[in-house]
Amino acid sequence: DIQMTQSPSSLSASVGDRVTITCRASQSISSYLNWYQQKPGKAPKLLIYAASSLQSGVPSRFSGSGSGTDFTLTISSLQPEDFATYYCQQSYSTPAFGQGTRLEIK
Amino acid sequence: QVQLQESGPGLVKPSQTLSLTCTVSGGSISSGSYYWSWIRQPAGKGLEWIGRIYTSGSTNYNPSLKSRVTISVDTSKNQFSLKLSSVTAADTAVYYCAREVGIAAAGIWGQGTLVTVSS
Image (cartoon, rainbow over all chains, first blue to last red; front, side, top):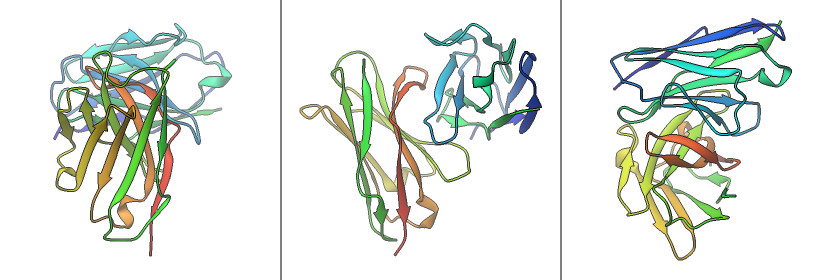
């Protein structure tokens, strides 16, 4: 099984900050990496697919990069609505999610 | 636009079979190159991918659940379904249905339904 490890597990930041979340795969997954945002009591929302492609309707302050084993999700300027939990997901083999990164208001 | 809605019992007894249905509205389940998937999330925990079915009927399952999972599609009703047998308390979770494109990118989700396994 391919294991996905996100860091940090939690993060405090302020509106306007630039934030980066990292996801590492236990083996190479090429660019088969997706990012989701989840708010309490809601279904996850797809932000980025194939490591760096922005899902339609997602603000351009979100971006993704990486390939192989190391990936990042960057939010260029945090907005109040961005405080949520973020998950990476590999789809190279049986799809699997990282453990999540909780982004909180400082 | 396409919307998904889960339905099914909210309470299942241990050792029984959990059965959920996802109804697709706003589009045909048979059109396009999509996978229709199930994902679950125990309270306060992360997401677990359960499996998916393609419009042709072919399926992929999480190996950790494969022996207990069946996903099927009923194109006449525009629905797909999940059956999970021999459930235990560890299967208590919010269950989501979703529409995936080829690389398991789930772009459309249902709202989720809580299933509790308890006697």
